[in-house]
Amino acid sequence: MKLELADLYYIPNFRFANGSTRDKYLLVLNHNNDNTIVLSLPTSKGRVPTHLEKGQFGCINCDASLFNCYRFLNGVDITEDIPSFSFPLDTFLYGEWIQDWSSDTLKMDYSIEDVDYFFRGKLKRELLKDTLICFINSVKVKRKYKAIFKELLNIL
Image (cartoon, rainbow, N blue to C red; front, side, top):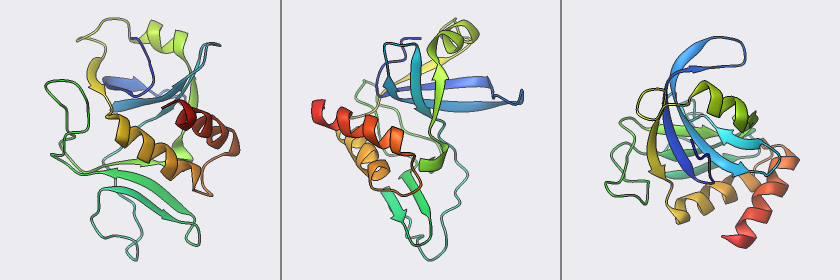
């Protein structure tokens, strides 16, 4: 695993911190030189409040409702690579679920490409920017991540 900015992976039997496992996608939102990556685990479980649900692609943010997510619609190509990748179901990145992981641990746990993990491509640059802006503008995202994302936007 390279675990570079905007890399999207599919990991069968992803192991969560609590020990449970489930098939998951993993999106790298930042990779520091200190072995730490910032990632989001996209989910097809939509929990958008009904008053915000409009079926739209992109950022859904409402500070008054303390809600933030970025929504990818199924069938819409989201990666730069050929062939491009699209999620099979509507898929959501939730601002409060952004987290730090050890890149060394991920590389040890998922070491064999096309067996332990599947590289799905690099998120399109404009989608990455939109996602970062969505998270920067949310009250649900931790300040430390907002600072990282602001720095990234300056270099993208």
